[in-house]
Length: 181
Image (cartoon, one colour):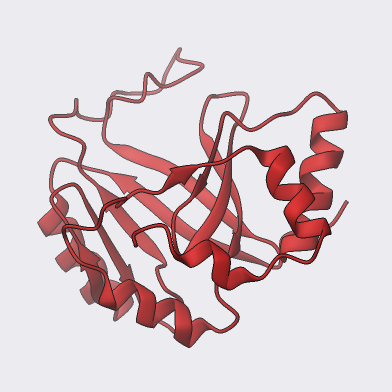
């Protein structure tokens, strides 16, 4: 199986989104690229986002993990970690994991990425993705040109087997960036 080519981004679920944005921007030398009422994206390099802050509403403070094997998902903390692949490598990886009985719980075209979300044994989310742009600059331009009123701010679910078939036929990435049109 192929390995990811890079760690893509980190998503933190928080009750203090503005404080977190300010702190991470200072600490990482990052800038805010996009935000709406429940999510914000920052980056410190040419990537469309490196850290995101999710605020889905009131959350419980992070509880001590002693004696726990899985999080309920309604508390502050790590929401998910993401790894970037090339499209063909992600298709190969998906099929290899599927053959081992490991399937994504959700697949979403986010506009800037095409993503498959899996749960690890502790029920943490792991996102395996490919970028929907041929260059990092295109990804940043997409992110900074988004509107707070985007029709699909989180993205559109897709069938992973259908996506793999599209990749195998020579997918044109520009087809994937029109979800908010």
